[in-house]
Amino acid sequence: MASPRNVSEKPLNICWVTVRKVNDLCSTTTLSLAQGLVNYGHKLTFLNPDNKKVHQNYPWTHVELFKSKIKGRQSSSIAKSAKKWFKKQLKNNFDIVLIDWQIAKFLLPFLEKRGNKIILIDRSPPADVSLFAKLQWRYWKSAWKYVLNEKISAGCVVSNAHKNFVSQNFPIPLERIHVLPAGVDPELFENEKKVSIESEIRLVYHGRLDKHRGILALPMLAHKLQSNTNTKLTMIGEGDALNN
View (cartoon, rainbow, N blue to C red):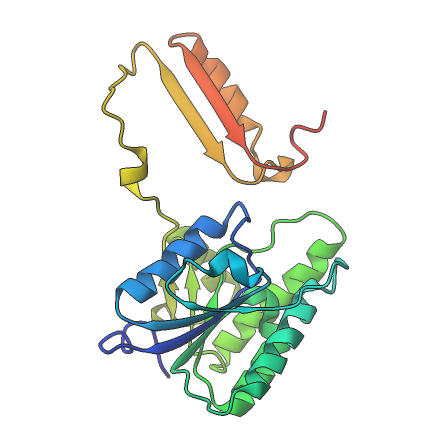
């Protein structure tokens, strides 16, 4: 089976099918990974629900996929649109196809018949607490079962804790679960003006603001720090934690 380690020695023709749009809060990591693949000399074809114009300045080929507006049908509609595109390609010349866990259930049987080598991308397990959460967990478990059964070559997660969570649920050899951290570009945060931490602490959180994520612990932390140091907390995102 192919893995990220033994296929990186030569430039590859890679296809990435993802449910994420570039204006999603979590898309910065996706874009950084895509840019990294290109920087290493790989050719990338990027399929997602974005309008083509959004990707006109990026160094990869973009394919716009249809995404249903009906919640519960969005993943299947993206996979269906991707299938239509693949069927139109005269040559099956991709060395690797990357797919998000949200669409693995719908897309993998089709790609398997084509003989494509597949790597699963899991940037986060299901986070919703709505009625759709149970459906999402089914999709997530189904995707990792494909890795367990070696229908998918390997899976990529964001941290060692994430890796341990997957391995606790599935007896997958650890060498087939790879960590691709959700990092930051430090150059974007360089500031010539240095502020003493004794005089001021500025905290910024960027992501989902959902109660079940424990996000309300951040204001509590800021409140405790405030007793000793001037503290400012900025929270950026959407969710139910700040509805009241």
